[in-house]
Image (cartoon, rainbow over all chains, first blue to last red):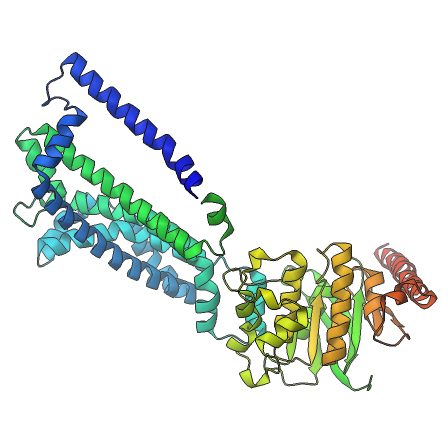
Length: 261
Length: 260
């Protein structure tokens, strides 16, 4: 296991270290001012110095992201189940889901900010809309990917619709659902940040996007990079978290997961 | 054999929506406690026949009468693949029929008994991916028997197993039949396997499948491995082969004559 971890993580870690060293060396040797391009050490110093406000903002963004993701997951899986139960429901609702997916969230956000009672809910709904479709599409695909012989077996033993769904379709769809969640996790963060940009709300309850805008207005470029770094690190952590969850849920039986772990 | 029919297939035909006619006016019966092997060329409708008996397909013409209550528990089906649920352990796979529509009171086998029956006591908590092809098929066998079905339908179950594994599974099937005395329809490509396992071998024509002939295997069950080297065995195999080739040729000529 240790060997595998080091084999998988070592190349990317080395790459990051080399890139940071090259960046630091370039900035120092060419004396680029920090307001044009800060060195990694300046960004790190800003992370320490402004840590309090940045981490608080990160928690706000994370809160929005995870509430949105929970709503999207619950809604998308429920809707996918309805789709496979009735072709009529699928035909009636799929176009609406596609419209939500293809309309840029930047265009929807101002309307949500007007209609919804508070800014936080508008941000949550924006992030949820972006995260919704990958989970819906993957779950629906997974639920209809049942092996026909398995379906024959369940028909032979007179399984009820509910038993087919719970004991056959849902486990078959699980790898697809996890793929949807891995994609949606990152998208929920993007949605939350994009909506924060549109909302542009300041104050103690504002998220990382606002801290980025604020630092830009003040030309605090190292702080902008620090906020950007936190966002990127959060995105990676969410993806890694869902990858870990996928392994935890599937590694006992799902051969592709076992091969790739 | 008591001679009482458990399944009666009467003038059954099956034409799929694609227009392909798989079976034509097929009449066949299975007696209580009897193993009937069905042999025939690829695509002759052997699997369709099993699916019709199981109720997984409906006949286009004719009818099928079953001598038992069709509540899901009276029938066991072994597909060409083991069709084990990959996310379920061996134990969970075996008990699947009891958790679905079948009445749990039909179960005459505990999981431990079922595992002992197939010799996989140490693999109750294993997942299918941890088993060999032969072991998976044995689990499928145990699953099909856990409701104590009166009828077992086997669709080329050992086709993908190596020769030695196949011999072992044949022996296991005979041993299970001795203990449970179920009736079975065993579809196979192998004439040798058919003659070894069955009381009666039914030979089918190329598509659309009809019955070309039947061969009764007189040697009493249980048959030992020595039966495979006996004169009776070789003669029975030859007879089945003869029906399969000569009648198939006749059929072919008849169809060609019709076309011209």
